Image (tube, rainbow, N blue to C red; front, side):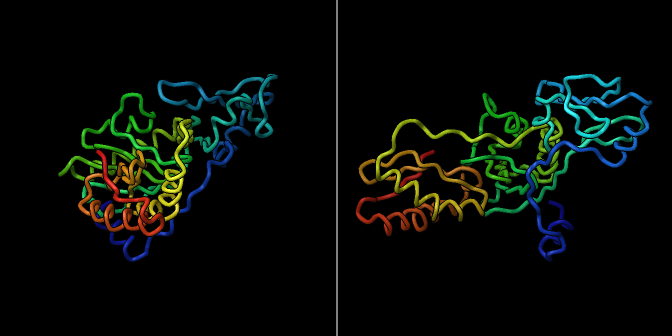
Length: 280
């Protein structure tokens, strides 16, 4: 975030960020006019063509044909592509059709000087938060963000992504990298990360109660600072957790652990909890 942007945000000059679900595929007014100008008997076919990452939007005109869904009087889309094209808008400029998608991005500082929280106007993650620090086997959006040598880890939650940088890596370059990565992902018809099912292994009754307390009392506060907490195990009264996102390496994380999380669990669960330990 540049100095002027930060100044405007601090004074409330920037409008509130509105988070919207991707809408159905649509055309801009310019695209509608270009379609209306097609020769008589011609329609516009729009497809989502598989690419190395995601899909690219392709448009070509031709005689009407069966097997396509009409999205307007003279625009056709293959039925399976309708879901893929959600959130995409077709525009017409410089003599050709091109895909667009709406995205607003805001950066916010966190208690961790090496962590930054980015708020996005589109959902990025469904369900529990997702944390990545290794590109191998990671989600394509995480791979793109981790592709910058200055990025140590990324955490996705709802409509936010938290980036933890290598110490002393300039934020200006990382801000630009995050912006480009998110826009390219969405322009390739990228969707929010799908929910990950919980482990099939049954948690103990105490673990379930600890999970419930973390979800209701602890996570909302940590999420505001761009972090998250994962419960690893509850054994012999010791709760072992892994703090990720901006909480990883944050100077305040030890205080949060002992005087926030541990104290809360002891107050609500009494002698069943002896201590909370951070692993990793």
